[in-house]
Length: 478
Ligand SMILES: [Zn+2]
Image (cartoon, rainbow, N blue to C red; front, side):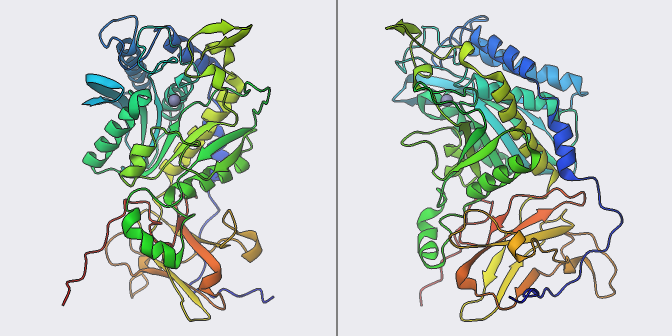
């Protein structure tokens, strides 16, 4: 095999000493995540008795209202500790539905840590604060929801505490949602808010059931996180269907590339957690609060335990034939929950430190070469191009000499004076791959910040962009 099969019309960036390793910085950032604080959060959430969406929103001690008031106060405490670095907010809407017999106000409480350079690029971590027992309409029985989803809320609050000690170029949103068990209402409310704000949502990490490591059949696994992601993207799929049938991309939605990103991150950080990528939108026949985001075209994935325990979720608290049922705190594995939380914190920090992914396009039909082009996203000092065989699960680097540093040509004007990226004078970036047949590969490109933080890879496929799909204007029929 020829080794120099790629000829890039560019040169390597010339630079000073390399910056500190981004992964080393991520390891330092996630280290303070505390199982003790995670436990305290879940103990407090359980103390509200029930957090059912139809329970009291005004009782100061018991019910969903007491719980979200506490979560909001917790965000405020975290913000006070960082010189008011968080903007704590609420957003609400009122719904009626199968599990909401009367109009019910659904309120999400969240904290925004504004990015220093790219405040409109947003990464979201979320968990649902509501809980339930066997009957989804039972709003009075104790529903501790320690794992579902006290664990997710605990991760959200801990991520805010840990990451608010640092500054990031992009924005991080920490969100606790209501109404998940009644029909994913909190997800709908926050997704609509994100759209109304015009946020460029790069990723939503939906944490739901992330704190148990043993199932009812005795199977235990405290070394894997499941990351569930959609295949063909929900939003725009009708418009994209024909192009996908022709060009492929069923396995390259932005959500799936977030899944690959988390897998790679977990491997590199060595936190004792491997990612098991589950290539379906959610667990079999079930749903979660990432789905309303997918429906609006925002990249989102669900993070969940390796093995669920069905005796410990959505169950009345009881003992039958010596077997205990119910989502109680004694079933939470806090060492495991701490690892799951660290994976989240690392992903938030990495994505908020990196520019958003570019939107690569590929050409090469009936040619012995392939050309990949993309436009500057601004804030990127270089880009990495990846490829993989069409039947390969993950991006391949090593077998083809790894990544590519495509010189950002457009950062230089005709006098070769350096310009700031994103100043509107750039030509599209371009990589030409000699002797590479486009038929046999999938291509993708990530953006890299000046200090080395890399975005998720965006695939050069129909619907591969991280932004909501917009159908091109239809040609006027003659
Ligand atoms: Zn849940």
